[in-house]
Length: 363
Image (tube, rainbow, N blue to C red; front, side):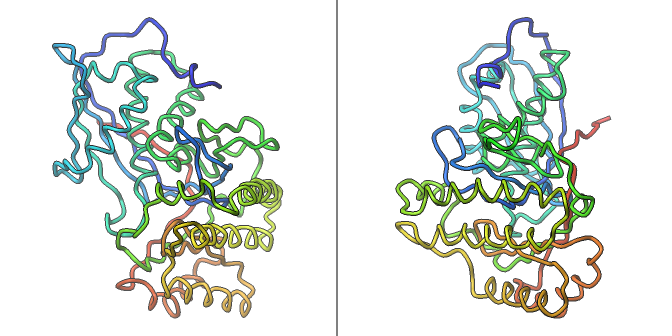
């Protein structure tokens, strides 16, 4: 699809007011997206596990304006409290999507959002938060333009979410979502994420992700700044090629359940992401000493037990521990006995692979 196909046509219904609520999950990339072009276009394709427990719930209340205006009219509430400091990001998002949602200035909006995970937990909420808001807006659009096909709804929701946060494009569906064009994977696009169109092994359908919270503080370098540092990076082009190749390698692994190869690809991707940060100009390090302690403990445990537990990292210090559901009891013991000491205040979050966003009936 092209961007123009996301611009609504004629025949809009008259909807005076209402409200919609969506829950949308976060996700964790297996092949990382790092570096982007204009308009939130990824420099390389990526694939992620959709999570289940770590999610945002967003309600969009809308009422038609009595008088037309040239401004977006909205208020934002987080956990019931009005948050003015969140508004600039939403304003920017609305500006980016206005061409594809020309009805937005016809309404006054009240946005209410909350996360199932603590705000200071070190988990990026942009993927879940922006995708939940995009889904609410698409629900309004579906009311304005009845008869919308489900596939189009999901594609456009992902397309809009991407314009708020790149990784948000991967939070609409599950369990595995690809974002970014790849010649070997049909229907992929730089404009939106798509559910991996191939059969996946049963073992990956309920894979576990325990997030070890090494550092709950705000990152010293934002992801947006980090992405921009890939422009002119001496290793950028090779990295983009590597990501595309790793995604191609991962497809048969996800089909066959080859956990040895899965571990190799996923851990290499995580370390390469941070290698790009350490070799950019200016350079920076987001891992902490305890991140490295945990990685070394994981390697030693895997070597000792043969349990195929592995790690991945986002652009931060926290460690995502990935492992099959069948090994959950043993791995949780390992976490309690050996890893929790390296977590800030002993905190970690247990999650698993999920199926994507859900609409909540306001009844």
